[in-house]
Amino acid sequence: MKKKILVTGGAGFLGSHLCERLLNEGNEVICLDNYFTGQKQNVIHLLDNPYFELVRHDVTMPFFIEVDQIFNLACPASPIHYQYNPIKTIKTSVAGAINMLGLAKRINARILQASTSEVYGDPKIHPQPESYWGHVNPIGTRACYDEGKRCAESLFVNYHRQNNVDIKIIRIFNTYGPRMHPHDGRVVSNFIVQALKNEDITMYGDGEQTRSFQYVDDLIEGMIRLMNSRDDFFGPVNIGNPGEFSMLELAEKVIQMTGSKSKIIFQPLPEDDPMQRKPDITLAKKELNWEPKVHLDEGLTRTIDFFKTVVK
Ligand code: NAD
Ligand code: UDP
Image (cartoon, rainbow, N blue to C red; front, side, top):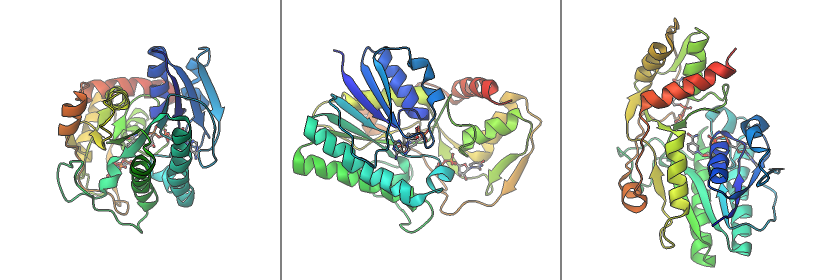
């Protein structure tokens, strides 16, 4: 059945893929964005669709509309962007969640929060199950994002307990793919752009720190499955690819796949940069029958092809 769906942060990297998928499934989509890190370019191909609407709005201000579902993605996600104006990042996470939860409560809509593996901070348990409470520095440079997202999770759960709002919480692990911003400083986009330009590959720290990367299509599938999951399951649920790589391995793979002449140079590790990250996806498998399908090599090939069209 056709649904009316609001996607906040819809002009961003993940939001644009979500809008596209929801439209392809025959829904009506309202994409809300203040274009802080997102761009019209990401959704320009959707503008001809009469069931797609684009609204310039900031989630820290209330917004009124009648919809069936809300995906709350609005929030800068890359460290350089969320640290550019940390107070605004906290306001976006916290005031944005309050505004969207208030809307969901008023119109009886189901609402999904895009949370993050950053709620686990620099984890001391490996891999990370949802039951782990995390290891977060509340006053560090990443705290505006980590604590903002943790507070948003708390708001979601309390709107559910106190007001019976129909909530879902997804904890997204590092995701990559076409339409990542070429200058947002995240590792996959940085390494590919540097490799395509034959520039130095900037390795922070010794490169032994690990991450687990999932391709965007796998994430969107998990997000939609969670949104449409049974009424009495709200998560939080980890969605990520358990394949774990060091940043050195990633750099070597990108250099090899692009045939680049780039050399790896070492720079200081940013403050509170987590050493290890890998999702335990047992819950997603059990509740959503979900697991990632796209292998790193295949996802990187598609992502490199995208960056070849934007890197001049
Ligand atoms: P992105 O920066 O590309 O997208 C975020 C979007 O939100 C942008 O279009 C931006 O303009 C918009 N936005 C920011 N502040 C806003 C505000 N106050 N009002 C309205 N719009 C606002 O990042 P992304 O990678 O697409 O991430 C989307 C969501 O997923 C974020 O909530 C992020 O925290 C979460 N997430 C992403 C990853 C990842 O690896 N990409 C991992 C974990 C969680
Ligand atoms: N990183 C790096 N070089 C870069 C960008 C990032 O070595 O040019 C490292 C970064 O220090 C971190 C990892 O890659 O250890 C992932 O960084 P990203 O910002 O993509 O994600 P997050 O740290 O939020 O998981």
